[in-house]
Amino acid sequence: MMSEEKSLNFIEQIIEEDLKNGFPKEKLRFRFPPEPNGYLHVGHASAICLNFGLGIEYQSPVNLRFDDTNPAKEEQEFVDAIKRDVQWLGFQWDEERFASDYFQELYDWAVEFIKKDKAYIDSQSSEDMAKQKGTPTQVGANSPFRNRSIEENLDLFERMKNGEFPEGTHVLRAKIDMASTNMLMRDPIMYRILHKHHHRTGDAWCIYPMYDWAHGESDYIEGISHSLCTLEFLPHRELYDWFLDQIYDANKVRPKQREFARRNLSHTVVSKRKLLQLVQEGHVTAWDDPRMSTISGMRRRGYTPASIRNFAKTIGIAKRTNLIDVSLLEFCVREDLNKTAPRVMSVLNPVKLIITNYPEGKEEWLEAENNPEEEIMTFRKLPFSKELYIEREDFQEEANKKFFRLTLGTEVRLKNAYIIKGENVIKDADGNITEIHATYDVDSKSGSGTEASQRKVKGTIHWVSIPHAVKAEVRLYDRLFTHENPDGDKEVDFKEYINPNSLEVITGYVEPSLKSAQPEDKFQFQRLGYFCVDKDSSAEKIVFNKTVGLRNTWAKVEAKE
Image (cartoon, rainbow, N blue to C red; front, side, top):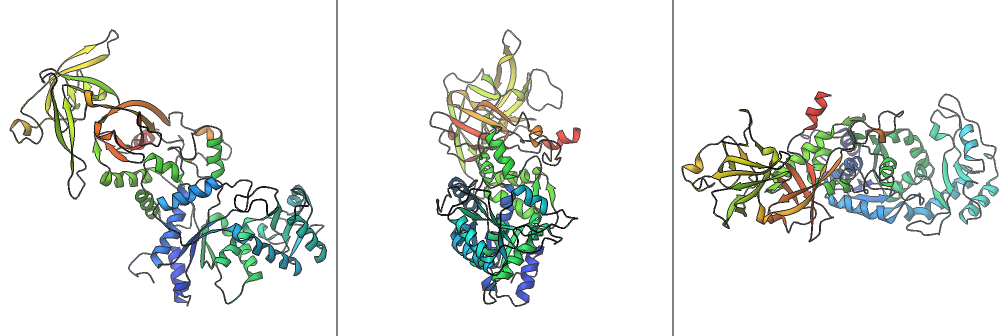
């Protein structure tokens, strides 16, 4: 059992109560049951952390079971992506299972339902079925086919399985109660005809089980003790239990469905249908576009597994659905990257700086620390020369006393290098500054211990040596939606809120140590933010994605609005 000192969430309290009432701890088993019809998103990440976290906490197995009952929408690509995402988050499943593993067993049980007069073949159109189902305030009407003979139902069901009928002509329905106050109990569909190729079973089946029928029975077959799902499945619990009642053997573990609230994330959508829409309509480049709320997208953007796990832990498990500010996720990312990402020099909006009194042709290799947060400090060599790139925003010809960067007649320190003083500028015909000329104090080299090196100046700016600079494509990502809840108003198409400035592609210059950086390598571009090497990089061109800024700039924007 878990330590009493730990504050338990309500799911853990349920498990602890079951253990206290005699449920054997060694029979605890959990599962994560994704449908392979798209990539996993940040909401799934919370569910993954919950189920696998319970497995770790209780030293119990966790299955990865694919709910692959709809071949019209499912692909092997999605299976592979889901497995990759779960492992990347730092978890490993006990057994890899598929609902399709149980197609024969589910079919055999369905036949038993028919024999016990608990299921029948309905041949109505879907429109007629919807009409006779009633409303939440009006009871449903029995299907005209509800009292078909068992023999006819068995014959039709087998012929459905054998592919003798077109899609939509027949369904198998459970015979429960058309007057139930729970609409899901009004003779729910168990099987429908689909002449579709299945990514695992090929063309072996022409009928496929519905989610409500397959899910609980799959849990039962696998010996899942606690079947955890989101709150929208609460009305399904009655049906989950009814199906189990028909087949339950008291000698086996009976799964218990319990629900937790979906945690929606601001400025994004987490509906797989809507994420697919964004991909298919070209609003993003792919499922792993760094603006997407998919785990693959967050990974490509530079988010870390630890930051996502910490985010899931921070928001916790609740009984009520709410909207979590994406700033919290970004905070978790910054917090982790601050400890792990090397600090490097890069310039994204360059202007040339010439140190006029620095010797022509000379170059120095200066020592720079990689990350001051490291337990054991490591260093790298950084080239310095007469001509440098600095950020255009780090210079003003004339500035007020609150501007602590480079101006004419004032001094700043070049990070890890020398103190320089602005002398004059060169402009083009339009008045734009093309060069800044400065002088340096030869005795002010950082770390040299000289009196000049210890002189205090108001500002420190970053730079890149022009002869050594590596040209890079830099993709500046922003939130995909301008509205905090783009999916909140059903009268407005969520795509109306797509941020037209969610991606800006620029050319920047980085220090030469980054030339050999590999995809998913993460860095802090000093004073600019956190960046990650994109998979589009090649030997000829390195591409960086902006992961997150050094601070939350959206807070100020939204405060003004």
